[in-house]
Length: 227
Image (cartoon, rainbow, N blue to C red; front, top):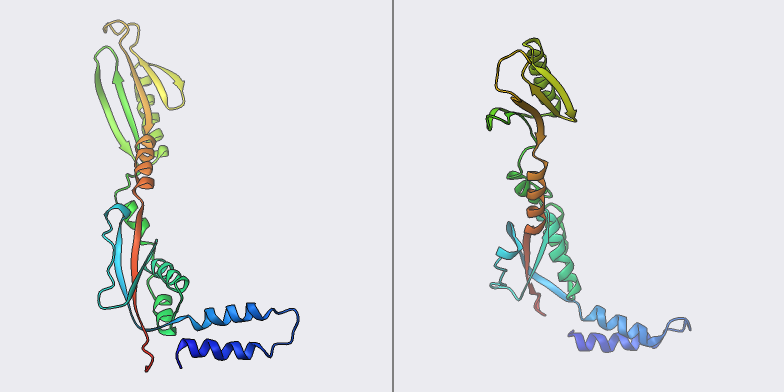
């Protein structure tokens, strides 16, 4: 039975509805929508992987009638998005396709790609001498605690050697020569602990603007009348 005949038959059935709360026109409209649903005969899912939106070339239908492309953070999420478009376009999603989507990999591949080039959080200890205009010491640490421990030991050693230590604020110290050292006057150095948060902020801003997505498509062909 073709769709026209099915709709006509369903309209006749609606004539027997006696509930006054249900309008016959609404029933006919709902029946027409149901009758207009396209049945998927064949389908194919396509895994495009992770890429930036600007570089995605799109997907063709190939030997199928239609193609729907979805995005997400994983293959499963992208296929779910494509399936929603498929359903919105009036296609009935077969159980086999639903099962394939349900079993798709749900790992957040986008985060892995984005974080692959993310700089590590680190702290750098710098010991510089203003008069000399040169960097005397620079060491990098994985944590602030390690950097502070390193500086504390160095300051203790400098104090024992007669240097004058003044704390200027959080993570910054002034190191002055002893008055009787005979060194160049006002030979002052500074020890500081700095992190690379600014570099991380720049990276995060670039990552947010990259619009990296996982792309996947569903190609479908309509089931023939005699199938």
